[in-house]
Image (cartoon, rainbow, N blue to C red; front, side, top):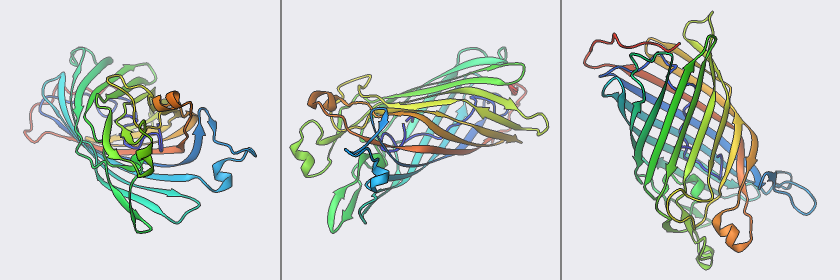
Amino acid sequence: MAQAQGCVVARSNGETGGPESEGGYLTPGEFDFNIGYRHQFSFVHYIGEAPELNAQGLTRVQLGTQVENKVNLENVSLTYQLTSRFSVTANIPVLSASRHSNNTDTFQLSDGIGDTSFLVSGWLWNPHENRKGNVQIGFGMQLPTGNDDVITNLNGKPTVNDYSIQPGSGGYGIIMQWAAFKNLPFAQAYFNGSYLATPQNTNGVLRSATAANQPLTEYNSISDQYLLEAGFAVPVKKVSGLTLTFGPRFEGVPANDLIGTSLGFRRPGFALSIEPGFQYYRHGNVFSFSIAKAMYRDRTRSVPDDILGTHGDAAFANYVWLASYSFRFDPFHRNHSAATPHQ
C-alpha cells in the first residue's frame, strides 16, 4: 500500500507508470501475474520541512549520528479479470530491511511476509466502448498477516525493532484505489492513487522499556497511508513496445487517520518526488523501471507531538528505486477479441 519514505513508511507497493499502458485492457478469463520491487535507503533526517540541525547548524549526517534504514520490498500479486469491467486481485508483500545508527555497531534486522491484501476493481465505463480513456475504482481489505513484533538481540538484550522495518502493521485496513488514463495525440496521461484507512488505534506491542513511561507513545500507531502519482506515458516510435514515463509522485502518512483515533507512536509526513521511468511490453510481458527523486519532504507533527508540544524527526530517502515484471495469461485459452491496447 501507499506509502512517504524511510522511517515515515516502509510498506509501499512498487507500481509505476500508466494504469493500462501495458498492452490494453485485460479480458474476461485472463490473469495478470506481477512481481514488484522497491528499494530505498533512508538517512536524511527532517523535522518539519527542513533537515534536522544541531545548535551549530550541522546535520546528523555531518555529525555522523544519522539512523540508516535500508528497505527492500517485493510485492507478488495476481489479478483475475472476472468480466470486461470487474477484476479481483490478491497481493502478498515480502520485506527484508535493516536499521543502523551510524555511530554504533548495532543493527536491527527484519524479514518476512507483510500484510496481505485483496481488492475488487471495476472500470466506470465499458472498456469495449471507451478505448481512449477510462477510470478504474477499487475497494479491498488489508489483513494483518505480517509480524509486527520482530525482535533483534542488541548486546545480548532482546529489543523490539523499530516499526519502520517491521513486516506488518498489526492491524486491519480498508483499501481505496483508483487508476485513470486519457489518450492524447502524443501520449497517454495517467492519474493513479490509493489510500489505506486503518480503523484500529495501536498494535499493542510495547516499543521498549523506556516507552512504558510515555503513555501516549508506548505502543506503535497503526497509521493510514496514501499514494498519488500522475504524469505522461510517451511511446517511443522507433522501438516497438517501449514507453517513457514521467510525472510527480506524492506519498505519505497523515497525522490523523480517516477513521478512529490517532494516538500511539508514528512518524507522519510526506515526500513529493519526480519519477522518470520506462515500460517495455512484448508478448504479454511488461518490464517497468523508475526512480523517484525526492524534491520536497516534510516530517509533520503527530497527535502526541501536538499534545506534548514536541516535534519528532524522521529519516527520508533521497531516491526510491522501483521495478516490476508482469505477465498476462489465459489458462483456458478463451477468445480475446475484446483486448484493445490503449496506445
